[in-house]
Length: 211
Image 1 (cartoon, rainbow, N blue to C red):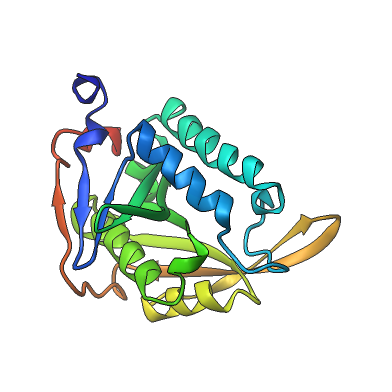
Image 2 (tube, one colour):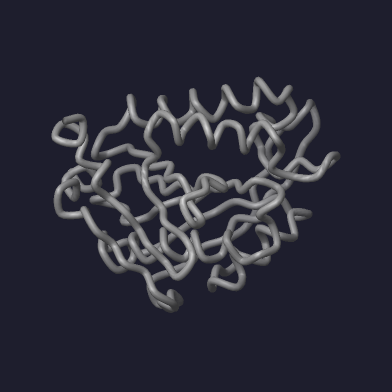
């Protein structure tokens, strides 16, 4: 079985309303369809890499290629885990946890997107809290980082609700213009577990996260 060679497929995070896990091929296609239908309102640009500006076909293809790329480039000292977010079996988006030199730095980054129709229902907060639970409670992280455009009110709200604090700014180039992101940091001291998070399958793949 594939999971014998890639035990990350055993890893599942379950919250009150959501299940987070690696999608199979058909579920990945369904997640690509969700992205193709739109992940933010027209005129918004929440991502530094403007992958949502393309056609529906290009957005869907990006989701598939990005997932395959994360799996194929995985190393214990540099990994990115994009998990499908499922509500009652329906795929609604992807949340990801990333670590580099994690055994030394004990820091992770997160990113996410949800289909537009699933915004404003608390799913983003619930899914990211599950990722943070995995990072802090199971993997021994000391800090979680994120970077958010200053006008991205939704992501800013989720981050601050979870206890992130300002950690400076980053200046990048998007469409030939400078854009400013707030760097936000959540430390172990500020992390407050909340709600149900059940994690199964971690022991089979723990060595994937810490070299």
